[in-house]
Length: 222
Image (cartoon, rainbow, N blue to C red; front, side, top):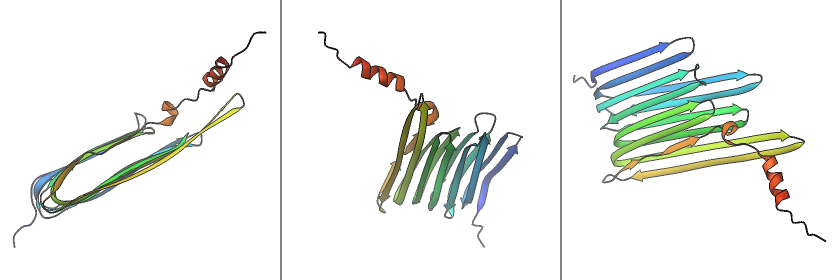
């Protein structure tokens, strides 16, 4: 019987300390890759919550492949998480990559998912979360038939009380896209999503608004 999977190189590295955990996997060969990774993290203080999640699913058909990922969670630096990944396969790829964040001060959520199914593909991925800041980028290139999709979304519910004035800010967004090619086609796609923590980026300035209203008032002399 012919050996379907002949790995030329395979390295699995995993380490953890009291506040830092990292894992990596590197492989290349002739065969297939099946992997499903789910990571979650959370922190809380004084009734406030901050957490996130990351997912990675990969299935390649029998054939030549290269595969590499590295995940790191670092609680010593603002509950930081990052991942880098690379996969190249010439006999079919099915994948999904996700990352999300949720916090309660202010109430805000952000999430990203990129997924696809292709005949032959090369895919690079980078994810980064620090506190309530989130970003994810990917480059997917394939030949022949393929379907690539993405979904991003966020919501913010922010309330500020200052000198008997209550100011609120609410927003929500959801975006979907699909890209498909036929047997004679192919594509290169580079989606990117960034979310900035509203507690740092959005500042209520009611004093400035009141001064503007006063300055725009005209007083006529008798």
